[in-house]
Length: 385
Image 1 (cartoon, rainbow, N blue to C red):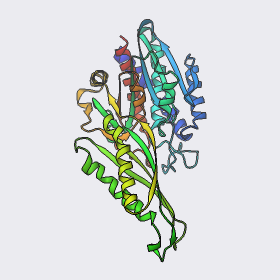
Image 2 (cartoon, rainbow, N blue to C red):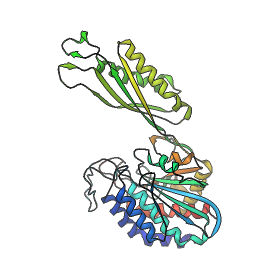
Image 3 (tube, rainbow, N blue to C red):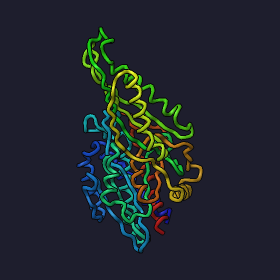
Image 4 (cartoon, one colour):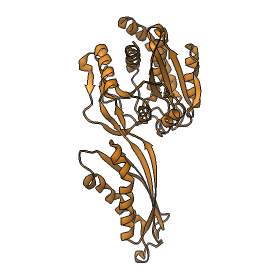
């Protein structure tokens, strides 16, 4: 059966590449995945599915019921693109100026659509069902939470996802049990000073100087307040102030993100950030207003599900092509929202030596598509036997 499945998927490879090229050429930003959603839904209908659309925004969900009763496995792919100008000189380069699939979601969506096609042919072998989740707004970490809020994880016993990864060789996968990716939350700090003429700084309370001191002081959270074995990142990513060369402004605005792998550490970071910002401001006679927004929790892979992924991948690719990821990433993924409802795992699908993700020259390697489809198909068949 494994040989038959492999041959089926290999015969789909040209169609998979064509499908990805279409998606790559027509990228859509988070919350705007209208055409992508319609494309996915139409493709599902052509395979005999009855997709539900408009889930959590522009999400699409479909269910394949097997030949016998059993558990339910969910498989998730994300659909949105990034606000990046593409530099790839390929026939299918982005036709939407300033938007491109620089994170591989065109490959993720194609892989899941291919998986649907393959598993519909093997419906009778499934003891249970597979729920296919096509998610919007991953890049803004909002889509997964909304989809879960609308019930896509109800009755789900396990969930899996993949992410195309340039640092893993083509024909390999990267796996890790436990913490895989960090949480991601954001904050704003408005420093309130007293403006005036740049020639008379003594008559002002300079919010730029105060803000700059806050930027440096916040780095002591990771270096002096948190156990070095507990990874934490606090980054200021935007600093806005001033309108003229000869004017010290009244306010400065700082925008940042904080990331961690531990729930307890995550809960405590807003108080640490507030204490430092307010203390620095107080020392200089300024005040500040802080706003915190919770993003996505850490991705923590379930040991049992990741063991299933490893076993299936080793049988398919060879044990030497199942690569253990030694350290978690401080990048974030809202796949974590699904893990709050059922055990699951995300693994990295090797893309080989292509440009890094989130760059203008990234491009998902078409040769990885049938590998991802076969892995998803085998995982489903193994879990639902």
